Length: 112
Image 1 (cartoon, rainbow, N blue to C red):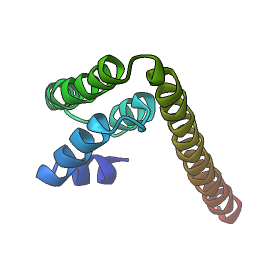
Image 2 (cartoon, rainbow, N blue to C red):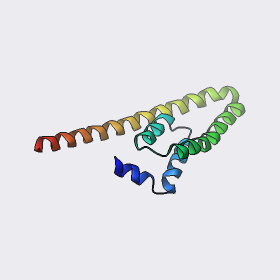
Image 3 (cartoon, rainbow, N blue to C red):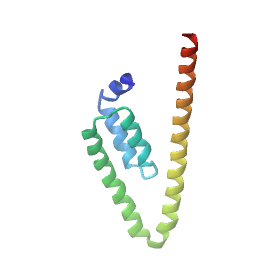
């Protein structure tokens, strides 16, 4: 885990990734927050990037709601569906990686 945390502290690419994921309307916010917590991402940078990423996200969603009025319901439901699909994909990847981690750990314990 320390190796992953050290890799996450190495540069601006991680900051851009978090900012980009926060700005995307179809990316659920919970998996990003969970992943940052797991790798113990610097909380000050996390809060700043979350704030900077969510402002444009919500401005765009608010503008779409204002501009399209009644049509926003269909757009929002499509965004919600896309967000749920992305969330399921992320949870599937996390589950698969967890399975591989546990399987590898069991093999190591059996060898000892």
